[in-house]
Amino acid sequence: MRLIDIKTLIEFWNTHADSRESLTRWYQTAEKANWRNIKQVRHVYPHADAVAVKSGRTATVFNIMGGNYRLITAIHYNRQVVYLMAVLTHKEYSTDKWKKRL
Image (cartoon, rainbow, N blue to C red; front, side, top):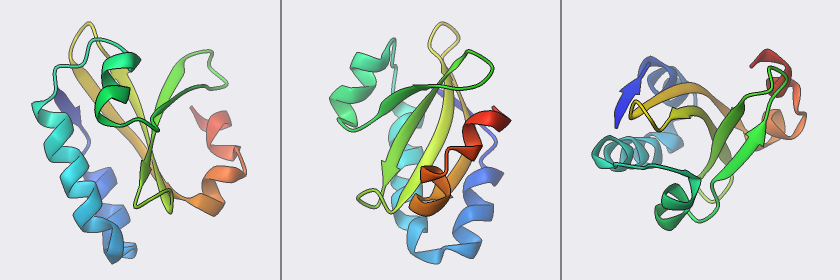
């Protein structure tokens, strides 16, 4: 997969240093992946969720560090591209405000 906007991860781990190792591991795994659908994603990340957002599109959300953080992505399976939209704390994620921005 081609991953777009690694700065999203870097900016987050600069503020939340404990997330760096987990986000780096996720990045390395996703970069080597050849996912064609959410089922294949869940084979590697069983807790990944496809979540509808305000635009009507679907975001794929990954739990990072046992759910302490959430990585929000937009996966275009047909083009093999993953857009890194946001990384949120569990508290930020649970407000659902992020859904309105996407």
